[in-house]
Length: 203
Image 1 (cartoon, rainbow, N blue to C red):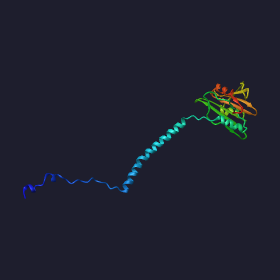
Image 2 (cartoon, one colour; image 1 turned 45 degrees about the vertical axis):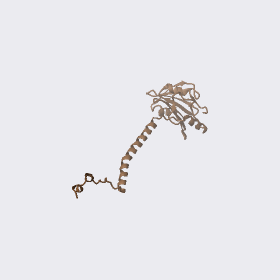
Image 3 (cartoon, rainbow, N blue to C red; image 1 turned 30 degrees about the vertical axis):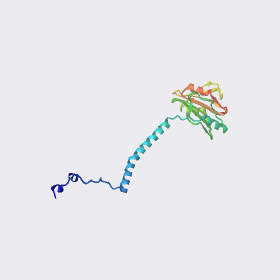
Image 4 (cartoon, helix red, strand yellow; image 1 turned 135 degrees about the vertical axis):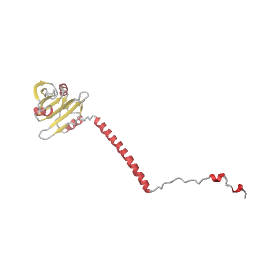
């Protein structure tokens, strides 16, 4: 045999066996572990997003101005044959911030409340209580009775003034066997409401 036949070829000596890629066993336990990891990672994110959404809705709801349907409350009271007094229309920019209420019992009372902006408001109460009691409750505990004034309205022409040290004012009048009082922080607003009062059926 010749030396040429005995010498291995360069091609055969350079070939190396391929090393198979390392594979990891896919077990049920490993799958469960991966799922737990994802839950631990994702759940806090979902909770934070939901919390922010709830917070935004709460803030948005808090910024919304609640406007009560005072006209519907008046109609319901009149259908029930309750004696109520209300403004035939509201001045521009005013709205009812609470539902009008009627309290029955031994001391029936009809109350309404209107606001404009953050500082202007007007309250109204028609009840069997005395004017002094209503003034002390709604104007000030130390409300002072003033002079009688003539203000022609659909429900009364003679009114008694009430005031406190801070300038809040109120006007009371006898309406049948009941006392009507309208009050607020500005005398002009209160007088404006007096001229708008009526007992006519609201259509």
